[in-house]
Length: 448
Image (spheres, rainbow, N blue to C red):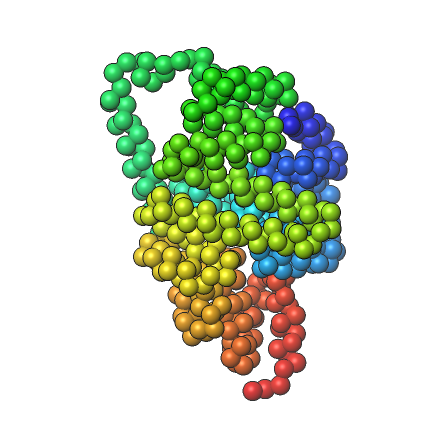
């Protein structure tokens, strides 16, 4: 479906300062397509401008946003990332400039597979808080995964501007600079312009199929052309992939998935096809889960969610097998194995990733969760503390670590230590998870 006219309508309303209408159109578009990056970006700007134009009492905003924010944090803890994102949007409608909530929205969207929307949110956080290195690094990572290495490098440079000693950003900048130099060197081997472009018409057709916005007529024409090309070349994986791309644009995920799977059967070692096949299968499962939820079939929705978790673990295992030296992939695999409840397998992957400063913090935080799941609280505490570091400023990850350390203290009946840890969060973010309720409980608790 072509959303360009609706996006133009929302943008025009925003220019005319008709904020409510603009916001409503963007929300409707995101209901139809949660990963429509332009709509997510437009919604952030519309909410910001409405807030700046009209404002509102801080107490009333906090009061109206407390319930959806608490709900969102509970949903994220349960691994229900799409539902978490929706609840965060409800909260951000009243507090659109909340830096941590926006970052949490980006993380939830990324975990749900909505990378275009996640990127739009990270870019908004970077605009809102230019020194937020986490948002800048996340944006850089998504740009890199999307193949835009120049913009990825730009975001990592900005992250280093915010924190010149950030090891993750330093490593990423070094890797990207090396790749750019290598790419330039490859042009030395081109001997004729035909080596760069053998068929201009085919290239133009491919460019059309890659465009973000196509009219319904253009999609139909492109699909017809590719279907004919596929009929003439039924064993050409490149044609299969192009047809899969246009099928996905026309919301035919089943066809797109089957075509990519077929292409992969011809090119079993193609990392791009492995990733694409996994992503499409995940989208199909998420779509089926959302449909089951909408129909009120909780049992089927739960079954599909379990299937999705198992699929993601198997998918990232294939990715790691294809690129065994990519420690970022091992962290992602470990995260998914942990979500699947396989703590031992997750530990094996995450322990290999701790040697790289770029991924060490996330790997250690996940290692700690594995130990905590297995009941090895002393080992969990050690890894959480290593991941926390000096924690001069409490970002989202630091608050999550402190919360888990406090939970360990409670499990060990050390209420004084638990209160101290919860208090560190409470003094900077009273709305984080249920930390306010925890503080109230511990205030009433009898001395040890």
